[in-house]
Image (tube, rainbow, N blue to C red; front, top):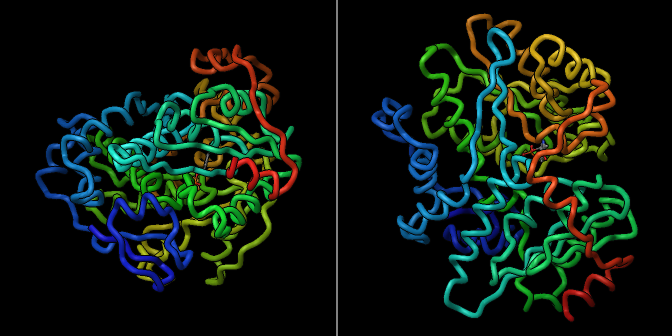
Length: 429
Ligand SMILES: *Cc1c(COP(=O)(O)O)cnc(C)c1O
């Protein structure tokens, strides 16, 4: 399987190269050259398959010959070492909980898969890669945990000092080993700018820098598993399936659209956003106009120029008319998000956090005119990750899960930096 760059100005590469490089040399995102639908037999018998078997069948064509089948199966076993429960919240709506991994955010799946692919590619050479990421909170923790102990990969995480929650900071800074946390005197955009500069810096070529956000195909592709898991549970009702994804960089929903290309019968997608409404506006006006990001209570989705939207356009044949059939996108305010959290709790005792609540709002809006459908929203983080907001809205205390207790007891270790020169010196030291 080969991947081409969506900027169309770079050579095609195999899965291995695309994972190691992250972004193509022409700065384009990689995209699979072919997408071959899965067999009828697979869908007819999906309810008899384990999550691991489903994952293997769906991803093997994208990995191709670069990882032997037995190794790929092992990587999948290790990646999917936790459950993905589907919880009914009202008559026709379900929450697919993606947060039972080590850092309690859905990004665990992609981070675990990517780290194990890189470890396999570096298995017998002395080659090392450095994963460099900027985080506003959740990505850093998932990447730190996913890559912990993978000897051939050094992980360097930049986070804005004082701008991430206590839990998030502990998840980033307490692991040690091959994980280094740099505490930047600045905001998230400063971290992001430093990372971008490092990728372009010729002096750092020998460090073999790569990224671990959803532009990397090894983080993006495994996210399609969730959609198959939801279908497996709901197939028996034989109703049109609507899935709503709380969207920031649109990696998750883009993986869902890929799953549909593989033959998964999803009737309709909803990309639910907070006030960062670049895509909802695009669907209204036909014009894609990136904007500076706005701060909201669902801050993992504060993105004004979603990086995966270009992949979605490719999946829809770069024709805006094709979106109308099965794709909607709606934007919601913080006030609406809070109201949804309250109403979910009142009607079904379900505790949602702000990102999931936005997914729920988008789902409900779409189901208004699809009365015969069954709906799923993705709950992308455990409420404890946004406990300050959720506890205030619902006036309750969320018990702290084991995974989180474990890091809270550990000691923070970070290095303070304030300029690009500091970062460069650190990477070269
Ligand atoms: C990253 C994140 C999202 C957004 O996912 P995308 O794939 O970037 O659209 C939503 N919710 C949470 C909790 C996240 O951490």
